[in-house]
Length: 141
Length: 483
Image 1 (cartoon, each protein chain N blue to C red):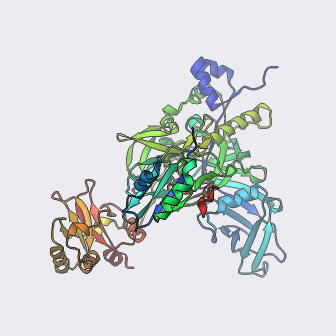
Image 2: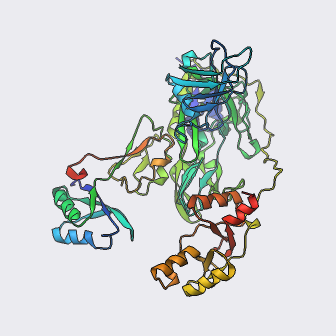
Image 3: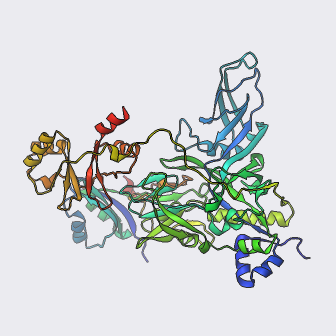
């Protein structure tokens, strides 16, 4: 299985009404899967997954069309602080948080959608959850 | 070699009774250990600093900027778990101070005083660790709830409560407590638990010193008052915590050994999660008696999903079942290797106390006492017509309803002004459809908090079916409360 790269697309009020994502897909013939999206007339955000071989090209294409492209922040759990209560469990919309048989709380980083969501962060009584910038290629420029 | 004493954790006991029956379990088992690890707000620690030179009779004191109580003589302080730091409120509090001291960290003590002939000093600043304290005792006045409500939220917005973060419209629920592992649940008639019962407390050994405040045995909401030496505790089992927008608290680990003195206790300690039922309560209604939406067993709660109405809802535990289990295991090993001795209580916990409501001598105002008839319109009316109605009735808010009088939205005089300025013609384009509302029996204080949070000046008053009953405005509230 290829590890898809997650990119976060931000659409300003100016460009939000244009079908940019569809245009990029058509122009490059590359599938882009949309993991999460929040778009309204004031602008919006799309969390997308793209094939690693096409990341640079697609990012350039989006940027040319006035979209801000960044890497999503992902959840990081401080295991020293976490005391496995599970207050975060019911807040996760994508079921990235689960209990093991011994009631340890585990995070599935691959499922977590990160900064477009972040619902669990302020629900943690131990304040053990943070949204962290991911290290990646030249995307963070 | 035969073991001197047969100890099982409560979970092991349930399995044994299930496979071999109560009679066998009674004959074989001497002690059952229990455990719980959860947020226990009514907790704190008493410390004695020793005297300074020249001496001070502390009037006010802070540790790491958290104000601590000074209820007694010169240098005795009580660190309340929920007191919040003045520089980092909602983030760091008394619970964190206690945890930091237990883990050996240095803390800063500041104090002020009025000065007397015998205690002339008026200011003090020093740093200390737990080794510098004469006494450092956990002294908790309500811990270890037998069970607790399951919380959810009917409102249209996220609320932050002492039961954690609750998503809108029943999209999640939370619960607390270890269910069948809970100490009091395994001895529900308090046959073995009372004043003087030696317990696992925060990783050390402590004692039950009585029933806790709000102890309500009849409703299976028993609580404990406990004490223990913090210097022998571990920060693994005493943790400061912060509930966003609610405040700081402390997580405490408690384990109680239950000697199986009779067959009845063997049966009681076999209680299962499915036999422990609690209410699902709507924390969206901030009243003393919050509406109950049904009930649920701890088995369902621990499964991660419950049913509210016909909806499947994910449920979070606020207490740590993993740590509760670990506590029961540690207590078991302590008893087995004779480093923990069971004690006979000097007095049993009461089984007949009740938890009464507060006597209130001042009338509390509710929304219905300031509700006015609402000026309404339908969404098909002309902007001009609505503008005229605003002038005729001299109001700022017009509530949009449908044919049945149900809420569809709201229009303010400001919206109309804006529409005119921008040349908008249709009323439906300017209606605000996401409306913050109130109900007749909501406390006025709660309603006025809503207005402040959303920076609005009126709320439509609706019933359960969203039918509009009237409107309340911030001016009416201000008039009534004399603000």
